[in-house]
Image (cartoon, rainbow, N blue to C red; front, side, top):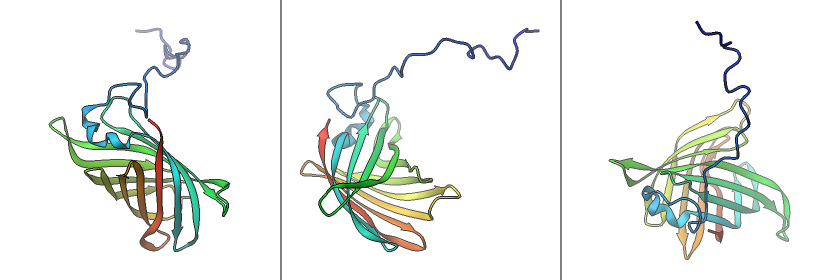
Length: 196
């Protein structure tokens, strides 16, 4: 019979650990080697910044700026992070806007990437979307397969996103179904590579 107290696990008084020891990079010149399953998504990896236009049937149109970081850590998925902020008529920042974080994963068959993709995106406003999609050349198209919301989140029921690399820039358009409205245009932007 052990004298160990189950309420005192051995790691409870262990010394502190160092910072996370594995690199993640949005710059292919540094960090881990890109997983071969991500080769077709390589043009998306980077730090992107630009402007867009937003709207929805329940809100007024607005101008915004955005920064998207798409990075990897050597495994077969991409980390996606987006931060946006509202701009006034003189392009000055007014307030923070949408944020989301998530992962893009190529569907693997026998260890090889297909053109099919899965994406999981989460917002701080209580909405998590599971997207299924397809890559065609330098274009990626996603549609929601499922939307999960917290009890206090706005009613979002679906979405559709189209991303593309066009003349070196990241362009996208997003449609959303929410608040009793079917899929409607919501966001579109053009971002230029500022890192990676």
